Image (cartoon, rainbow, N blue to C red; front, side, top):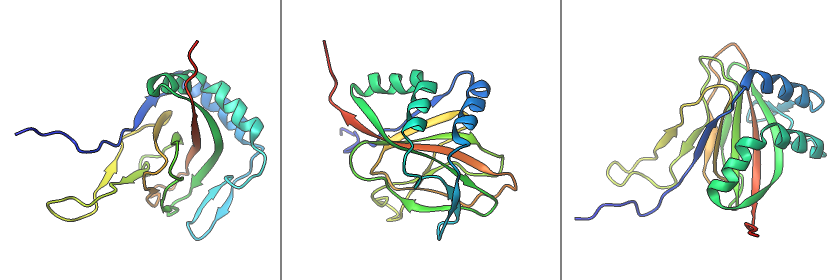
Length: 180
């Protein structure tokens, strides 16, 4: 009998080199883009700040190595269409959501206290044996980036730590791979 997956849902994970130095630059870049409380999800974000083109450009320059590696891996160029930071105080969370159907989303873990959870993913179909929704934890540390298809349902469980959890997220729209 042959066994193989009918479908596969890939994700990518990379640890940023020289994280401590790059984190300082990233925090300085984010400072002008104030986070505000988002309700009813109960977390802070600057997602709805209108013009973030300078932030996106600076972010791309700072993490060009990791982002270029991803582009080569998927054999597609892309454009960062949106970028934002979110912070979670103790008890803060974000409900399950997706970012659309086309392209990729990513999360960079800027501050990840011991008792806070990283992003959790929801399998898009129930387990065929127990008929239950399955959740996937991805084990990360500060300075890690995870990239996944935008269509994947995901959420941030309540932060259990008294220290603030902070992430930077972004969406990427693929563009055709240009070959010389």
